[in-house]
Each structure stands twice: as structure tokens, then as C-alpha cells.
Amino acid sequence: MLITKIGKSRKGRNGYAVYIDEALSFHASEAMLTKFGLRRGVQLDQETVEEIASASSMEEARAVAVNLISYRPRSSKELSDKLKQKGFSAEIACDVIRHLQDVNLVNDLEFARMLVRDKLRGKPMGRAMVRRKLLEKGIGFQIVERVLKEYISEDDEREAATRLAAKKLKLSRSRFADLDTSRRRKRMMDYLVGRGFSAEVALKTVRTVFP
Image 1: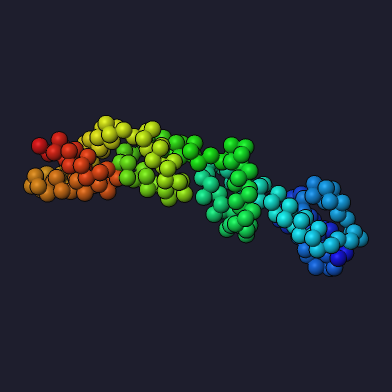
Image 2 (image 1 turned 60 degrees about the vertical axis):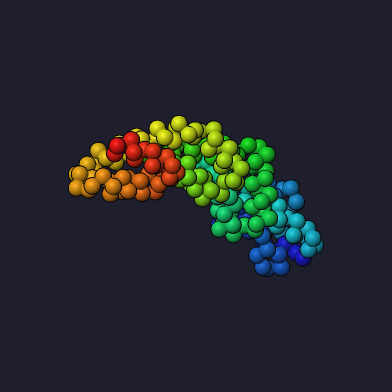
């Protein structure tokens, strides 16, 4: 197997396309060319070609992953999905994420904590909604439950539900004014449960707002 051409790759400013027997075989960085001594006229066996191609894909996947997390933190699952969407194999995605976890550039626990803090600074929501949002990001169940215990106590949830109910009532006072007490309670109850509060917390809050 003979390297017949090495030219600039469209994949990246420092990337090169390596042609073997006149056909494109793989892409490699300048560092990879130097490491494996790749140049026109060099003979390679199939095993070496596969080794170089795998190493080049890993290098490229790492660069893509680091670029993705430079914009914002991501969970392991989010990052894995992005890499697969860009054409990398599941095995390479897994290896890249494991490497980034080892150097603490990907940390699902800290990501979950950050996400919960951000969510709690916005519109109040109950544990169920926060849990759902974390699970949607691919955070493992054990991490989710640990972070919920750290950041949302029963008192916190009751206080948040009371604040949210008061705000809803203020913004929609005219709508509630036209309803009888039973329907007011049901509408507010549905609203709070929809925001992730448990039925128990929602019921206690409704009874406080509409005694």
C-alpha cells in the first residue's frame, strides 16, 4: 500500500488528506504525519493504516469535543450524542469522554449542580421538574437524586411553591376572581403540579393561598 499523495484537508486548517494507491484513505494532523513518518512514496501495511486512521479519528474527536465544551459545559451523554452526530463511532466517543472525565473537563456531578443552580435562579419549579430536566440531559439517576437532596429541601420546595402561587395569582387575579373557591384551587393546583411540585406540596400551598 503506497502513499501516493498528501494534500491539505478541508476538515481543518492544519489537517491533511492522505491518499493510498490514489484513493483517499484517512485524514491526519501535521503531528500525526510526523509521528508516523508519513510522506509521499512511503509503503504501509493494512495494520499500520488502521492504526493511523484510528489515532487520527481519536485526535480529531478530542478536538471537536474540547471545542464543544468551550462554548458551554455539557453532560457526558450530550457530548457523546454530538460526537456521534458528527460521524464518530460510539467507541471513539466513549474513549474521548473517558479521557475528558479523567482530566476533569467533563464532570456530570458538577454539571448537574450548575444546572440546578441556574434553574433555581429562574422561575421557581418543583423537584419533579428539576429531576426531569436533569434526566433529559442524560445525567444518571443516582447523581440526579444526590444533587436534588443537596439543593432542594422540603422547606425550599414549599417556599418556592408559595412564591410561585403568589406570583401567578397576582398576574392572573382577574381570571381567578371569576371562579368559585373550588375551581380556583383546582386551577392553581394544576398549575403547581405542572411546574413539578408534588401533589402534597401543591395542595398545602393552595389551601394557604385560598383558605
